[in-house]
Length: 349
Ligand SMILES: *Cc1c(COP(=O)(O)O)cnc(C)c1O
Image (cartoon, rainbow, N blue to C red; front, side, top):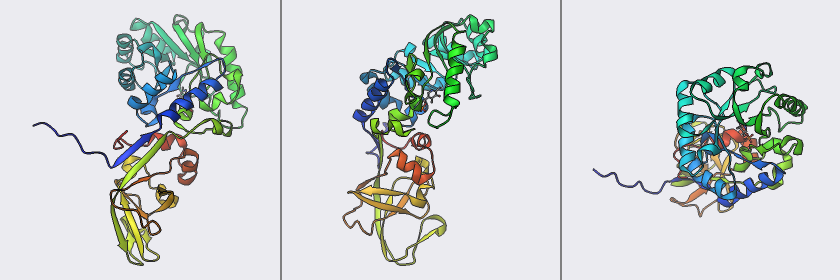
């Protein structure tokens, strides 16, 4: 049996490719003498590597960062060259190292053990992540002199800022430590700044920056607000419109009762798509310039909105979920990072 093509999705994620390209160019310009790379881990922060990477390549990005080896194939398929892809989690098994060697994709070495695994597999060009005080993943300063580290052929020596978006002296401390530690490492290039780090100034830029969130329209700090545009716009179809009486309950556990006769609309979008229950408290969708409040519990596959004041809204119409990330984070209590990476697999991208 041939499986028929599925019909058009009732749930779609509109990607503004011009905004994505403009965001990368803005971040590249703000990186001064450094080149901007692109963090495309977690399927390009939920937006989809297959659609995001070609646009970033066309804009000029030449260095991509993923976390897992499982994320490599889609980035290659989207047109990046193997030596343009760095895997941040590095080689944790001999199979990881063998895959890195076979694919030509470059591991980020994070520990003496990872360096040993890399050498055992035959080694080759790699990157090196130094820990400068985040105490998460990366080589501790005390291990820099290890012979296994000294024997690495390192392209980028990097570290990661823990609090670049905060008004704190932790970033300056990390910068100082990175500067002194990298003198003990032979590497072609250096990298420190994530999105918010780019706004900290030229001392943080080195040779390559690693923006993620800001590429996708997230605004980590006020200094970048004017340079970035929204990229992702989730849209869901109205499947049913109904009129309900005063006092009628809506949704699971009847957490909402109509305070008056209402017109409601049921949309094909739920927490399985990343619209968590917290949206139900203060969230709304947009239609024809009007905000329609979400009422009752968010279900797995559906939300209900109040469309009493939107008589034009009809079954089959699409509504926008307002995804200005700063505003959406404020409404939901989720971080901008979570709002992006939560977006589920059912969106047509
Ligand atoms: C995720 C990640 C980035 C990107 O960070 P943003 O805050 O999203 O810009 C950069 N570097 C490393 C090591 C990361 O893990």
